Length: 428
Image 1 (cartoon, rainbow, N blue to C red):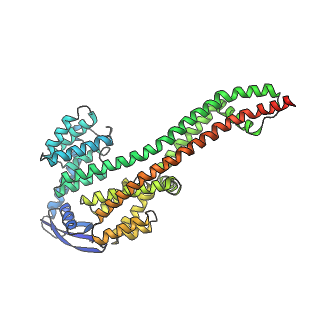
Image 2: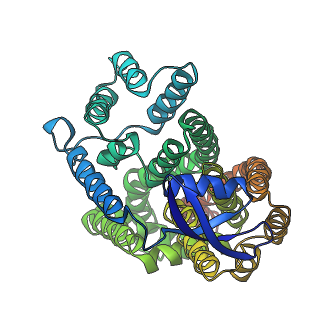
Image 3: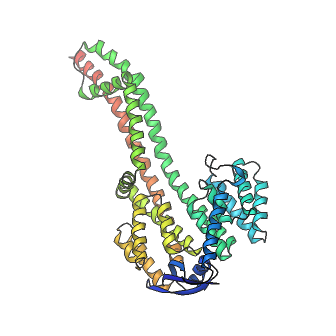
């Protein structure tokens, strides 16, 4: 047993410092959690015997990590990543096997045999098994496959190993990934319809402008004997001529725009600007905020329930949020908690999280049930995301119909205006 110095928050958000005896840092985290405390920092007490041993152990652990990076003598840098669906299924199955009493290595080998039709999963499980059998921990073995296992996943497995509740943590992870997949699937399904309609509209419009409109242009020139065309017709003819004769410039401009957009999006400032516009622009603003809040609450609750310290959990939430505005807001909260503040006030100061979220977090801190309250927030906002998606789809459908009517109807009217003019001249 070693002695550790800790700094933690109680259920009311007050900072507490003290010492605790534990096997290691993870054991200390779990003991503090049982006392209703959320650790912000834990360090081994100085001046105790065995300090050299701890350092040696750390060095040994580092060596194992380095070894596991090349598990099976192969570099994993260029190997394909596991699909999210396969990772979720693997997590759920491994959890079931461990709950049934199977040792970890035997469970992994069982799943490796079952993965015959999935070579990517089979290879990864084979390397993980070899690494664990060679003396590495499960979490250390997962770090060799960063493309497949996120920092959130690895940290939760690490906490599960330290607490001796790996099967429970795997169950929480599986539930978390399943709910995240449902949320993402719902949003993607909502966006599929308008994107498909826009693509079809683009193909139809391009076909009209490139193949149909030029034929009318020749007819009008012959019939009107060089008389000026109506303004709308001339505008449509000019666009048609550009699309037909300057298509290299058109496609080059589109390509340059896409590449430039992606390059800007990869920068922190560009990503922040894009996400900020999404958060502030209706009708997507409500959906983006609710989805971000649901992801934030679900991830933080899952990590805290697994025994991950609140500072590390906030860091992971920031890295996995998928929205730069939310990520920056979470880091503001992280820095405030590091200084000894609670969660509620920093959350409110960011102006990103709704008032109801701040109030529920404040109640969670006061009652000492913050992870449970965060889970309730996630459930509430996931349901609101479902409702918002349904409402957005109902709004988009008539909007798309009107949009198509304006585009196609505008082209048709532009082509009929010269004919009306010609009929009027013949009647005169």
